Length: 114
Length: 112
Image (cartoon, rainbow over all chains, first blue to last red; front, side):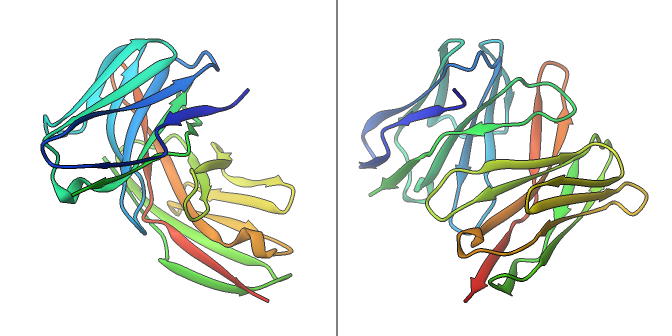
């Protein structure tokens, strides 16, 4: 099973709402990632968790709050977002090892902030 | 840090061969990966080159030249389903984790 599952697939929220994105993998991967992707752009790394600990935060605004409850689950909590935060949010997992670090991506959550 | 550059768009004919180039600048380099992403879909891993030379996987091949800081993805016998965006990517190591840096992406359009 090489599947990464993300829910929901689509999300519309107002700027005052609080919502959460969820990601799950059962490949035993030790690293999990959140990316943001705008149209016609490459995925932009937001956070990296390694062994359930936040290892990399790419200077993401605090209105995005990641959480890793266990080795299979990754959440992204959203609060007071701006319209410019509308994008495709991708979760990925990998063994985390150099050199290849092959990443397996979920289908993403398409977020619209009104 | 690393940066990877690709052409933004490439157009080719069904059944033909196309090459997508990637040049990189890096302070530490392990190898080069390629990912495919269809519109509305997730990126999927295609290939990895850790050493110089050609790696072949079915209709797709990938090449790396470390001395030239250059790689390419070669797609043969193009099919309409190959229309997608293609990203080269390079891993970076941090003290407790690693990440990959994506290139700017190449949108491949296939014409009948």
